[in-house]
Picture 1 (cartoon, rainbow, N blue to C red):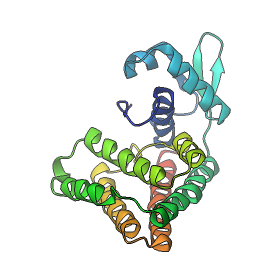
Picture 2 (cartoon, rainbow, N blue to C red; picture 1 turned 60 degrees about the vertical axis):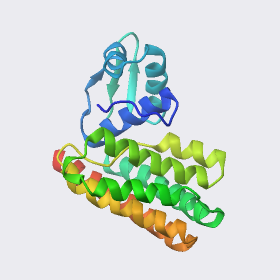
Picture 3 (spheres, one colour; picture 1 turned 60 degrees about the horizontal axis):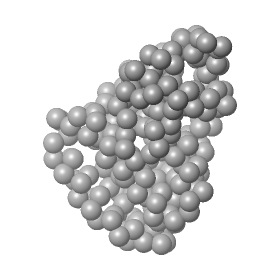
Picture 4 (tube, rainbow, N blue to C red; picture 1 turned 90 degrees about the horizontal axis):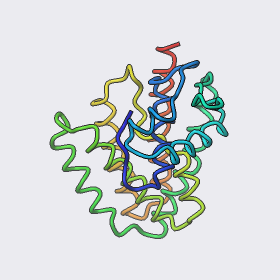
Length: 216
């Protein structure tokens, strides 16, 4: 599993990490998740992990067992598609609103992404994922709607790379897509920003579905 990120509350971070692991195939139907082992692996107390488990159970991804942690439920293609379609709807709206309202730090993030492109062959997972989350979070913030931000945080599942997918290829494409989104926002082209974000997340969906079909 991934290390924790800094931009979200701990319980939301853990939920996102576990959701990504479930979507990517790190965990499969019937696998048991131990509350204690998960907390130890992530370096946190059992309380936020328990809260994350409760969230994931409400989403239909796991089933809690009394004093036994949780069991991973079957995740089908429609579940994954529905999840990403919600992200497409909400994140493309956030990008549109960011373009309409203005995003003063867009240029700074473009520079960071272009710097990342200069050493993509040696980029670490942690470096990529921290910037990936920072870019998305900055766009949600620029949309200037607290409820929208919270909904998007609750849907976050990190980079859409399956266990059988080449990470570098995804990192290269995703980084350029982030730049394209931010440039549209920078130009205050709301329609283009909305379109580029929708395209970005749709590609992520297709990437996860390809991996899903590979492992079934």
